[in-house]
Image (tube, rainbow, N blue to C red; front, side, top):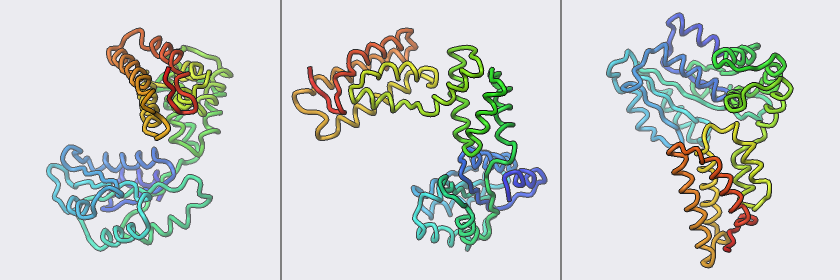
Length: 314
């Protein structure tokens, strides 16, 4: 069944004991799961258990599946990331699940390969592996993308023209999860920059698709002169400066752990760089008005300390 058919059946009070949510879009899988939660009226504090199959023990999952609910009509057991395990392990899990009957509700999620040309072979295999589960294909219906964009625009009062809505609909028709992230970026930009015309906004949307905080980290670690420019361009699309401080710290620690990253003679330089970041981190956490200026000065002062990822003392 489709996600829409699932919602219609849930509205009628038709709830199965097993569901298999399959799709390429994590966001749509989560929405289908939320619909099941809402229909069950499950108390998430007592009667909800969520597992990630690569990390969870089968015995623990089965124990929860057969545990009586505390305050809800049914316990909800969610097992995510089935696609992350080997086929042999998934076969064992599927055989165990299919051989038992539980009065609780089990929801399984499987994220399909986004680059796969066809989903039918995998869908057929999954249906055969979990015959007791109601399979739900979580994909975008025709017109859904435009409705979601328009709903988000109305909800957050975003100043987006028809041309940008059409661009987003076309660009992200097969990537609903990416669409959500893109709208978050645009909303952050509007919050800081205010209004912008349609053509400028379209250029912004295209540019943000290719902009990442790790580009700034790589530029900084390679001693590139455009590090500060990337930092400035990232400002509208990050929710807080703490994100960039965290990314820089992780990058420095990663490079420093390499054998060629730090030698005895330049440990002093490394300690100094990390100490500067610690000061900036305190400014961020105390909402200092100088946090952005501090980051700019840090980049100007230290971008040349790293060259091709290797730390050089001064």
